[in-house]
Length: 263
Image (cartoon, rainbow, N blue to C red; front, side):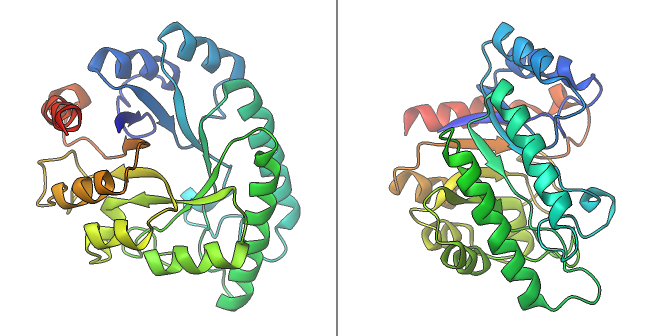
């Protein structure tokens, strides 16, 4: 397992493209970006190559989700917008070559029945999984806690397993965010075990507060042990909000790197 920096939340005192170099200098092995589309794809690819940093993960555009809306993936009437977002992600990914693509389920829209939303989400996830299968890029979905994002459709490992079954496509997997599971009062190691064989990416932040490891009370060790027992060899994405300056709160990174190297 290696650790990548989420550049949407870390090093935010810098322009997005300059955060690649900052992450490399800090000792991260790769980067992930929630929505990188503000940066021309060719520019981002050049910066990644200049710093020998793999791009681990990006999200498909999610419409108004980050502004409090329902997003695109599970809202009847927004099928054309989702198709456009998927095409944008495909074109961008062709240039920047991310290792994984994440599709955010979004919130349950007003006036929509949950089952209707889930059925549409399954259809869109299948569409995305099929589209990216041609280039060998796995598609992921994640569960997000309902405290930080009220109304989000997928909240628990059970929700992810149900959706995996609904979609039934070999190119779809689960992104496991340890912070969101903790906020949902899920046991972290149990969550890893529940999603055995389906985890394509892991993200983390401490809880409460969503700061760097050590800023809260979360014990990550059981989850790391469970991942190692499963032979998980993917990435751990540092997706947290630094308590202060990003570089001032990176004491955990050396310890984690040593922990993973010695395992």
